[in-house]
Image (cartoon, rainbow, N blue to C red; front, side):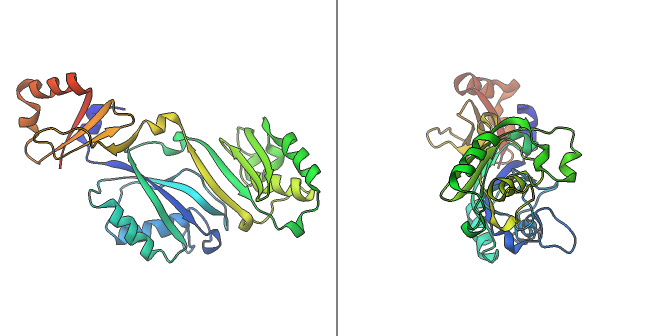
Length: 283
């Protein structure tokens, strides 16, 4: 985290925790002529005045028809309006197919997929279609859990990838098969589900698959920006802290930065000695 770069920039990163009905979309990534999760997100956000320069990054990419109870879209933006009002308006305009459940502010310019420690999926296959009994299913869940080459459970595109080693935990519950891992190969969950439930290594339909949960890395958690309500300083409009509060962002009125920092940085040096690292931004 480069403090000087952050101080010169007005951008923040925004993590939008979203849920969506996969049946309402043709794909996840933006494609011409297709209804996509990212495309719908971009269209509604831009209509509400929230814009960004670069692309949308995601915590988990889902196949066609796959739903999400929790996924995260990350963008870097100069937006300084009421983010909670924005979310309210977004959800009013999304037609119940895509919803923002919450937002967290963070550092701009991250390689967001690198900040994801794990993902959790649920495959809820209709019971009448399952060909194995509970004992067989539980045995296969144990057998297929661990860290190993999973290339037999992917498609042609997946087999062409350089790295085939993945770590996965599979459990059978009343809800279905629950998969947890740090990285999955293309169609891995659906093909594993097919093998466990039916004995065939074929990808079961995406409509029964849900991305349930995103697990952030400890590093990512330390980059989340929250409002600091226990500190106050004369001349400072608001204070935010990064992570657990070893670095703070002081927002001051426009045109007052030089005065606030002081001659030769005298004022800011005193504040940093007292509070720790401080980023000064004009608001």
